[in-house]
Length: 395
Image 1 (tube, rainbow, N blue to C red):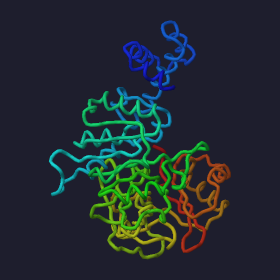
Image 2 (image 1 turned 135 degrees about the vertical axis):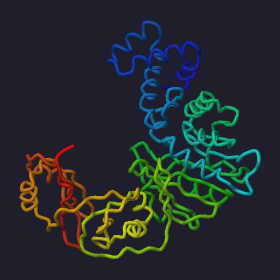
Image 3 (image 1 turned 90 degrees about the vertical axis):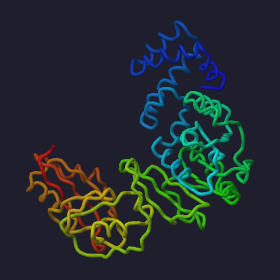
Image 4 (image 1 turned 45 degrees about the vertical axis):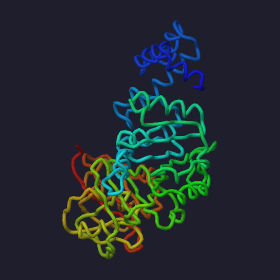
């Protein structure tokens, strides 16, 4: 889809084509294209079908808004889930004695299709947004208009390096993390690259920069707060915050809104107890395993591995809990015998600190019982071990 095709999609004729394409989502693509081509030219047919498919995919991130929004494939992949964008907007617009009465003025230095500035505008901010790609800018502008936020958002083609964050209350930036070879985990390969991001941060009074969850810790600027966000148990992204008081590390769980910051807790190390706790990935990335261990009154199985064990069944959103049935030195043959003895035919395999190939192990176990179990492959005091948990009939 090019800019001309997208512009035509916004015309009354294009809207009719899109509405018809939406009705054809899930049907045979050749038949769908053939049907639309009876009324519309090839370019509009392709644009409408592409947009209809992207809207369907976008529902997981944008809910009902997806049915009114516009997307590019890359823009949808990089865009922020609504719940995460709303969380950040709440943090930025929360109670502050120096908050301007007209709402914060935010510059979005690399706005993509607009997922973040939509949440900011809904939270009362006025946003100046830029992106280098004219098609992406057109899509972002159309999204602001489609959701009734065009009066709070101004979107234009521009280079993030030329943004002047000192002229705004807040800088927001979401550097692109894909290259021509696919996703990149190197901040120096972001677009804009990391030195440009750091320059923007240095000139902003307040800022929030979205980064990959696996950002190397050495790239986190001194004085910034790094927040890792998990949504329904999956770490989605990290954000760097500057210009406000707060912890240097933070983990946040959505949709519940739970937040964990350092307390100085250090987890002891000890033998396996009745339960094993697997901390949420956001807490692990934020180096808050000690804090989770304190919550469950637990201890580490190994000082270098983020599995916690304990003797009490404590419920917490910060960790999944498994009841321990047995702990064995790792041996495929002994594990298979132990599972067969328990009539286990289905296993969920977790591992941390283990070099075992999970799929090969699953094949080698050759199980056929009626019960299910979770097995954890890990090290206990540096010894390869396996923990058998939760043996029960399948649900």
